Length: 333
Image (tube, rainbow, N blue to C red; front, side, top):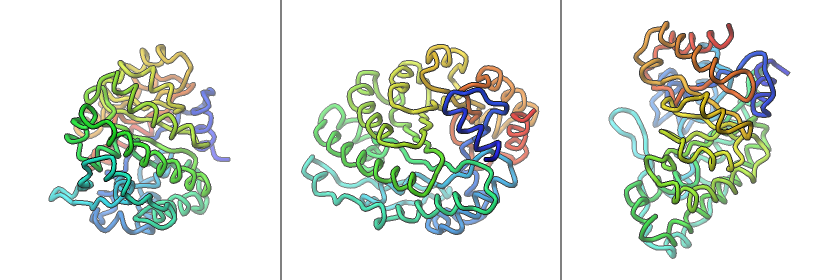
């Protein structure tokens, strides 16, 4: 077993490591690095696999990422994908107005519908890449965030207060698909799953709503899996950090606004932490010295047990490659 895979497994098991895994989430950066238009790349398994392998060789981060975008879940339910002039993509919401509309949605088949089979194939190809030395991590968004994609975030926020039956029915349906997809990833041998849940942020919903509507579905989904989960929620998550620790996630990936030392103390060994190099002020806009200083601060606060070095959020597409490299090199000092 390679040192990178061993270090990742030890980190999620809250064991001490010799070298902290450096795993910045670089999906959007990899898409730009590949030089392939996003609307082409996300439908080409071989191109995605090659882009991930080439990017890892160029930067040196400690993972292969078996994804470029997270939109294949809402897409499998019937959402079309819209591509902006900037090159970014988003799901076009469905016209769901009642619980009956949700019931009428066909349950997607992981092996047949949308891009789900393609994403399983990407994961399998990376797992079986010749001389692989790094863990393979897939990514999905949490049930609450996927529902916001399918309804539209503004409609979702209104429905949480005025049409809970619709939201709960949709959460149930999405949760079931996520569990099936996660089990398909387990079957092909991925090492872990990143679950991003930005709409579950404390800037979006109250602690009460998080506990009643976000946590139960996220918890059942994560606990249905055997592979370790890294849970990322954007923004100041101090109000919900204790509940995030109840999800079953092994690592909580924290935004750059969070103090890693205080979070680690608050979690008290219940799960590990990941983060939180500033993706904008350090990685995108900073100098290599800025990145080195920020990375060293995170490494000092995170320690050698139950810690994964990550960016505070997704790495911006235009981040200079030199800044990413120095982040990884600093973790190996």
